[in-house]
Image 1 (tube, rainbow, N blue to C red):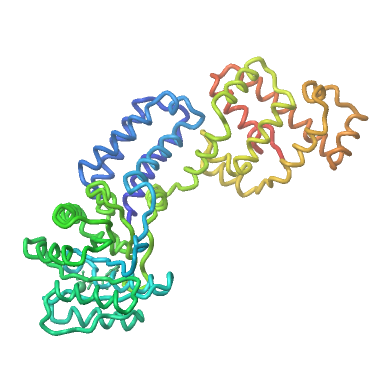
Image 2 (image 1 turned 180 degrees about the vertical axis):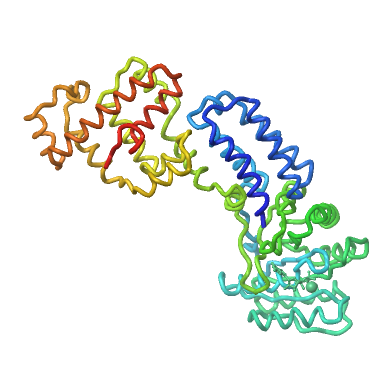
Length: 457
Ligand SMILES: Nc1nc2c(ncn2[C@@H]2O[C@H](COP(=O)(O)OP(=O)(O)O)[C@@H](O)[C@H]2O)c(=O)[nH]1
Ligand SMILES: [Mg+2]
């Protein structure tokens, strides 16, 4: 699922990150493409409109367009809005009630209700050691009750004895009564579905609901059905009231629009997803994981988060001002090294630096610069006096020996550090004529091997 959407969004957003600065027009153009991509993935139109508008409002702000890595900031905003659309936090089944917890499954025929019922039964039994009773209220299809019984045997979950001719409401009541009398923690009710929503089906489900007052009413919806699924969800929610959604066939090659719209349309969380025919093919639905799967850029998102935490705008500006004056002392170097460490070392920084091709990034990542080198350099810097850090030219032979001894390094390590600092500050001077942002980038970039300073090795 989500493959084609992922490809489309990846293209659009990738283009943004490859540009250094962004204008409002760039963002607007990109969002137009995002909109088309979502519509093609079958996301409901009102949901798409809402989504794009939300992203636009946040993305064209000063803060984003003037930030260190505007393209990535936009991706982060898209990601956050996706998460919000999918339901902010993951929601589990609500079974913390005086037992038995009654869970009713509703949905169209063939959506996967009976299978999901057995999957949930197995999960509650195996994972949370609950005592579960399942009952099929599907008296329409001759083999339906038998099907649940067979699955119950496979999953090692009890099913309510079948009484031929018993109507659905009576079965539901008997199931809950049996559950209470025999000390079951949960009673799962698998209801009958139709090929399309109709009044009969709705009133039957409503009658069961009124008779047993379920703690959870889950809509089982097939992710493959696209736009229809959204209408179905709206219909069920209006007539019966849902507490959550189980999305099935997420393992298929659906375009994913249903999954993306369902939460927004009903306001109900997607609680579980079916990812195969096997009874263990059931997973929790984590909005943030799904979002990063759709964007295929989970790493970038967390890096941007780290970057905004570590490179505060003011720090960046302060640094830029110093560069403007052509100053770059060992304190500044230390500050940059610390930032690098915080951001997960050089390989982490790579993605945040605009203007680097994928090839360059890969090369540097493969070089595997270890954080240990940065830590050693920081140790040397902290063995210096403040005066030495401000005026590196003071550091001659005897001082060098003291610093190396104090930091547990060798004089040649220190020489290397001094040389790198010299190269970096030369680089700073070279980028002086660029804009402030350019200077910051040049400054950070100069710290990278093969792109100026060439350290740490
Ligand atoms: N691939 C896949 N198949 C599923 C999933 N859930 C259910 N199915 C299959 O869908 C078909 C119909 O499922 P069933 O539970 O009988 O649907 P019901 O009519 O709503 O009770 C069965 O063949 C299931 O094996 C899923 O998550 N992935
Ligand atoms: Mg069924």
